[in-house]
Length: 601
Image (cartoon, rainbow, N blue to C red; front, side, top):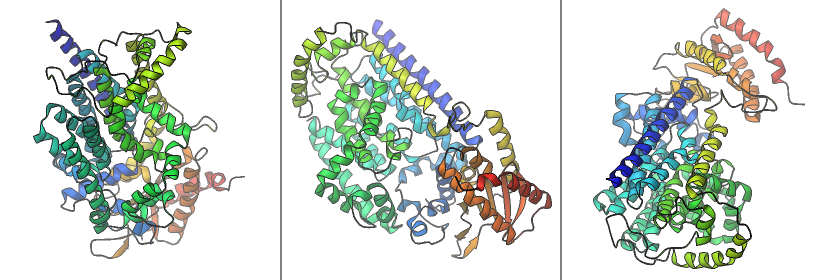
């Protein structure tokens, strides 16, 4: 009876937190969309889904604007461009029936939040394979409090939102030995993105090194590597040259000295330049440490001491650390989600050896050895003899941990008051800090109306301001017919993306289904949004200074007439006389912003 009470209590906690997570993230995500802070990627995915419902699978003129043909070769965007050349994402077809019933960017946001929330429930079931309800529920709560989960959820729709659900389900199937489910889930992970194979490869490595399922693990590693190699070197190039001319160079260009490279060439560059690889892994050292601490924080840093976590999460983590640029180290973007499943599974394995340690002081847990593996080892609840007594993954690490622990005994004796709080209380503090850091990081400007984007100079947009501005935007976008071709600035793209022909402003020219190069019929630009952020952000300032004279030129040469203008939002139509009132409003605005167009001193 007591066992049932504990089980129900743990389940209720997880359900309560899951509902809270779902409601909070959905409300803020939808608010972000309806106040025009959802950005370009939301529009890309919505157009991909919209085109797919029309039988044009994975086509997107918005994605074409990012393609190497446009960026490097100077071609115009093409409405028939297949996004599969950039990212091979057939798993999105699983959700196409839902989108077909409710074709809207909002549907994608609801789907996004729902699947991320559901993954926490699967994680709880996975934790219960090894852990009693109390610790299993804490594991699930930590998931919902993780910056690497909440941050990317409070964002545009993206493909990696499927990874936690698929990988947790795969690991649960492995634990239950449901091989009939395990292998389809493995295929689903590969279908998320080409680099989904990296996460799956980590699972295979764990299965081999732990000696639990070495044959299946070898098969998984072989499948993952073969899939990535064939897909990126032979399949994706059938759609476009983006993988070799753009993505490998943008992310890993520091390893090669040419303008294009295949993934196999990048892999050989890794192998042949170990010194450079090590340097890229550890630098910038501050950024890498901060990233790891952010990933470990909601689990009280336990994954750092779990060999299982390193085995599974190590490979997607390595893919992130080897990239150039700072955006890869942002814990609020989608790549961070690929690391999460391995870390949480590793934490489950760690706690399975120490289920009586939740109330133990932190200092005592550390003194007992964070790498130690008690004897006998844990086994899944009600499933004896599933885990071998020793394995390659934990044996040597445990030995090293023993030695370090013995050397540290004297130090702990000289600091008797340090870390006397219980593991549970320390864990609770870590969860609270993770939530605090997630909020204060203002992921993807979701909390723009609460947290200023800059203090000096002051950049802040209040809720009444943005709500009022949003109403002006809707007044103008409602004048654009649903089937008309349009070019829009970044934050206006999502709401207009459910159409065949749409570009990001200042692109105006595109290739239509008749293979003719034509100009869009409508163009709409939100200069007010850029104006709010230009004092502190160079990119917004440069774009603002480029767009204003470009709009003037379009109007002066009669290519486009200004047919609407409200609070810094200008609506234009091709070869149409300007509306006198709208033109006068534009000219007044143009005089007001003249000082902002002057070069910086």
